[in-house]
Length: 356
Ligand code: DGT
Ligand code: MG
Ligand code: MG
Image (cartoon, rainbow, N blue to C red; front, side, top):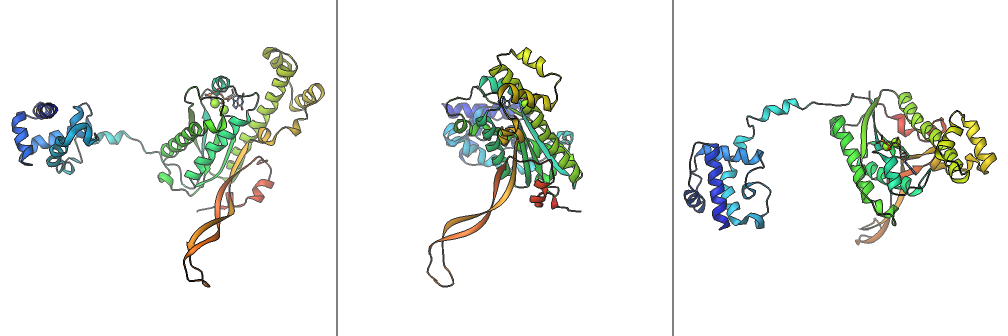
């Protein structure tokens, strides 16, 4: 019964898109004998439309499993399949011209920054501790590590709060330097990793809804510009963290309302906030965790790794499992100052690459 319906649908599709009327019974005979003598026009039109318009009956669409559509479909599609290459360029092909190319300028640092969408609400809905939630920050770092391991042309990453910046080496030819391709891959990989590792970092807090991240691409022509960019993000981390630490101390320990706390520190400088924290709450800001004050820098480090391999040696020609030590590049998180020169002197390889 199902097979009859498929043939009737097939017949209807052919006749509605060509001037040729092939009754289902004729179609059945053609297909049963594996004949390819269906009129070429009918075949072409049918193949073209089935490739491009998914509104046709499920049984004649591509991608259905054998079980879903039965052997008839396989037999039916076989004689049709040879005409696909002839239709590689359809009359609709011109629409591709509307796609714009967006390659990044050569020999520039490519920075991709992502940022949590509406994390003000997301952090509240998921009970993030204020002002910093260690679990949330580690989860961000975990997702960023995954990105770096997947895209090994990233030479350094920096993250704080709900954002992460990834720096691709100047000479990268990844995805032909196409901005949207690079950005969407990195942001989507980060987002899925964030969700993938959620339970590990928040074992007692189920994810309420899928989080999202925006992304942008920024190009920097000089090493100074790149360093200034990273310094800007780290300075932002410090300014926000000092503000938030002071604000939440006034609210949580000082009993102020949010409005009162805001008014109290609205016109203060860093030194004033340090003073409030120390004199009123006994908090020495310098002793706050480095991860909160400096954010997280991810860099590559060569580490020695011992693995077991089945191999021979010069002394012993018999193959047997042996411990072999090799050098491997590994992503390591640091909570350190990247504004001053010390970090860059200790990691000269990050900026050394000059391709022109
Ligand atoms: P957006 O980026 O325009 O979609 O909006 P938001 O709400 O994500 O704003 P944004 O990115 O400027 O600020 C980040 C928010 O994330 C901010 O409201 C505080 C929150 N957040 C990030 N990390 C933590 C954390 O560790 N603990 C808490 N309590 N909140 C955090
Ligand atoms: Mg955000
Ligand atoms: Mg943010």
